[in-house]
Image 1: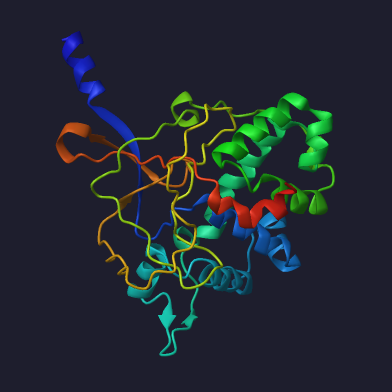
Image 2: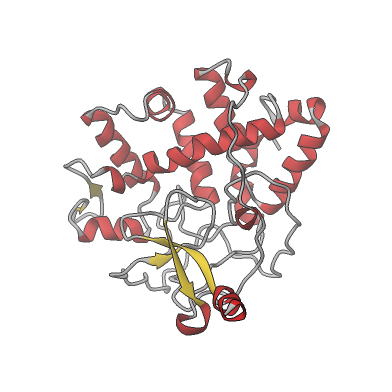
Length: 296
């Protein structure tokens, strides 16, 4: 019996499944979001000071920001299909009503980003910038360089700049109860793409793209570098011949394992439906537009 149970366990693995009303955030999209918020005091107060007490006007502002940052995504196609978003004849997107909390992907993202940033701070120490980290914590700086090489947590120091502006004591505060990090979510490797994977649609604007990005692990931890592919994919696709993917009526598999509390966890058997998690290889080309924000 013991042997049979072991074999059964070895054929199953937990995967993250995205519901149609959820968005599979990529690393460059998070960078763009943090950069956009850094330019607006109202957004800073909304997502950093009062994230759980948004007024109706604030919710509408969040929704309009979502239209601005995520126009060409499967998530947006779902909102249009459900008439949560209206596409005008000239192509402009418009929202006229409040969405349920489960559809407000920016607020839900920050429910994960805020505690994740606390854990990163605990590991790197109270450094405000990359340059200060290099002089104050050499070991932490080496860890951060490894993350940069793998395209992980690139949003952290721009996030710190906002957080320090609103909470000057945040960097000095210590976590009273840091959360343990599951090993399975810290280590990642390149795996074959799932047969159900839906490629991203071409972006019409250089604001944010649905392009694949390196996996964002739920806890900062140094990981072995992954050899980049010979021909990395560009961040923004300009090809007009690529058709937009059809909107799936069912949930889809997440390309990332970084939002542990965001997506629904399911267990599927490998041998039957061939549904595997996708861990994209490291690719630094997409990071170039954000290096100025990171001080590198």
